[in-house]
Length: 384
Ligand code: PMP
Image (cartoon, rainbow, N blue to C red):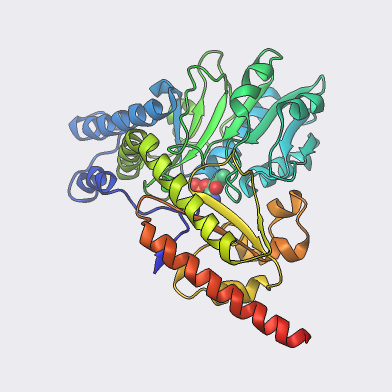
């Protein structure tokens, strides 16, 4: 098995597991309880809050725990708009956003929100000037992802943030695929709301966070009502084990960011070159430079997507994102980049991670070359 699907989910880091274990084996205590057991759990939660904040250059009290980035994105978008009572206002976002942003925005659109859906360029980039040109006098919120989960393309969110701040427009960034891969410093970038997910950076599944800026304060209406946890923004008993694992995963990710980024970029480039040397008719989906180290997305001319994926054996890669591949439609992200249905359908996303070795990359390349060659042979024979 060669696992090149780290953008879908990552294995749990051993240090994150160690941080979780006490809370799964014997330790008991609700972090909201006012006794020694509760205080111990609360201490673990607050330590992790500091670790997540440190990865972002944020303050611990700016981190709100959620069940994952789907919830973070829902809370940021619906919460910000509802708090301002601006359901009939205007929002700017992109067609290449994750489904959890797209569908949250659509939900608000059905209630009267006006939306500008920006189209990326052919490499998946949304430009600063393009966002600014789409703003209206009543624009309440801009939501733009830092890194696209299918192509790895990096949007210029750090350059955009001050331009929105000076106009008093709230800025939400889905940073799920950026955190732990790119340096993030929210003490410098005036982003108001930022979504994270633990399982994309070697933490456990089912836990995420929303950064909510304190100064100036980004205000949200809660989407889950109850005991008033997380400063009233997100009720529900905190899962101490998940949170402890998430915090530790962030610490490790921060420590390894630079070194691991350079290693993955070299492996990714090697994979791309190997495939391009041997196979004609390849198209890179995404930006050749402005992309995260671990992601390579290619479309293969002259093969049928479903057959290609079926012939990859024990190579785990994605077509489109795992979240939307249940629909088996060609990726809406690649369609937004201008790829036709056929090329969008015949695409593979390779996403490399900590466990990936050079030998695995070579084996993966050989497997793909063999599969594409065989399918093109059949297609060629059929048409002759
Ligand atoms: N945003 C992006 C960019 C993602 O890649 C994902 C995960 N596919 C999500 C949001 C949703 O994250 P979660 O799995 O934590 O709900």
